[in-house]
Amino acid sequence: MRICLVNTYHHWRGGDSTYAFELARLLGSRGHQVIHFAMKHPKNFPSEFEKYFVDYIDYRDLSETGGPLERIKAFPRSLYSFEARRKFAALLDATRPDIVHLQNFRRHLTFSILPEPNKRGMPVVMTAHDYDLICPSSVLFAHGASCDRCRGRNYYNAAMVRCKCGSFAGSAAIALEGYFMRVMGYDDLLDMIITPSRFARDKLVECGRPAARIRALPNFIDGSRYRPVYDNDGYAICFGRLSDEKGIEVLLEAAAGLPDVRLVIAGDGPCRTALEGQALKLGLKNAEFLGHVARDKILDLVSRAMFVVIPSIWPENFPYSVLEAFAVGKPVIASRIGGLPEMVENGGTGLLVEPGDPADLAKKMACLAENRALLREMGENARKRIETEFDAATHYRNIMQVYEELSA
Image: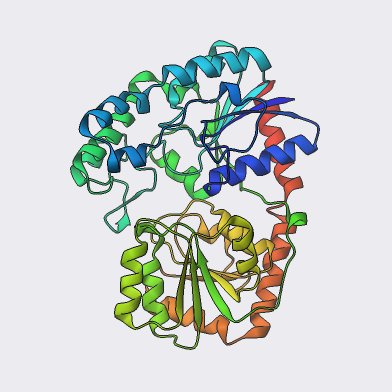
């Protein structure tokens, strides 16, 4: 079978890219041809299909450093890209895939590409790594709390509450994008939507998407490429993007009550400076900010940790940080929100805490830090779950069932 995988970034960058590369490797190992469509980028991995990739544009940099005229000119391209549609059409004609599998493609490749496989009778499946289809800001989070104000496609609420970086203009732009998608009927061109978590599936159905066209299928990881390490160097770790919804400020408050528990925070993002300031204000001597860390070094840091902490205050979908922690034999302390409770079995592969509750988080961190036997038991349980539930073979059977149903 020939599968066209569509993802904006053709390099390691977040869970969508991780899944796309894991899936491409899995499909290729089973004898299928994988065809990539993405955006050009200096960090991209080599690809035989690169000549079809869309020219690079950095909307975040443009919004921060570009002038008003530049931002105005870029906005229509974020809704509809003639270049992306033209190049995607050429790729489809040249490779004739049996199925098109979309990952994260909004704003850079845009929904404008969807009519092309439809015109050619090629089925289209989309993995919804976040909440793009029901939330203009994609995270169901605004101003420090979960948010579903746009339920029922009432996208104007995004502008009303300025959920995009507190900017009315930016929030109005993403609200317009939501209405544009609706008017153009792009949802009708998706034959199947896959959600990594049951929580995300339920949210899509709540917001009016047809249940028959949505299937929950967990992300996976190839455990054979990860070595479990059940010993540790005596620290807890939190890694990933440092932004409001990740709840790192809650973690720092918890750490203030645990002077004997060393905390490592690996990652960068818009909140890093504020978080480092908070740590100084709290007088934390047990917290260390490492900034951006390369992917291979992150995995080494995780493998030597006692446990991983995911203190999110937004409804995470199905983060790869949990899968990677499990793969190297580490339990996870995570917020009881979104898809996280589907991944972390409370008392089995880790512990669940109330989101935004530093006292509860501190209690659970102390519980694991003080119990080496429990750490190992949970780490072994976590690794077993990778081998039996979130494994490549299971995912391959399930994803091929979707492909074959749509291609029949």
